Amino acid sequence: MFGFFKRQKPKSHIVQQIELKGLDQVASDIVGGLMRQLSKTGYMFNFILAELDGASMGNDKAKKFAQESGIPESEYKGAHLYEHPLIDGPNGAKTLMDAACLSMLDQPQLMVDFRLAVLDKLMRQVEVGKYNDD
View (spheres, rainbow, N blue to C red):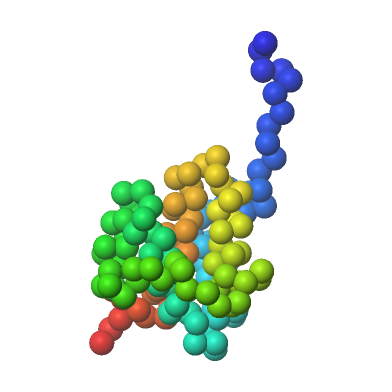
């Protein structure tokens, strides 16, 4: 009647962390984890391509990010289908990103901002696309 009995869905841990530390810091923390998980495996670039491919199919902001990534569409198109346990296995990088984003389904703009912030920081860290100094 007045909303007295409506239960608020508890905020996920990642959303709480974003509210506490800020999006930039949480994205940096996630990138640190991704770097530890993928940096010496040779699969970091595959993960970046998969994320860019996903962004290219997202909302206008995500599509613009992919277009301005400095990586040709021909290089990342279809990369979201790439399969490897370190990418999409139970503890894979993409699986963990997807799980974090699922907890933000009720906040789609935060989900997009989070995913793009992580991708941008990761691209900057490994110096690919628009961050490649060559």
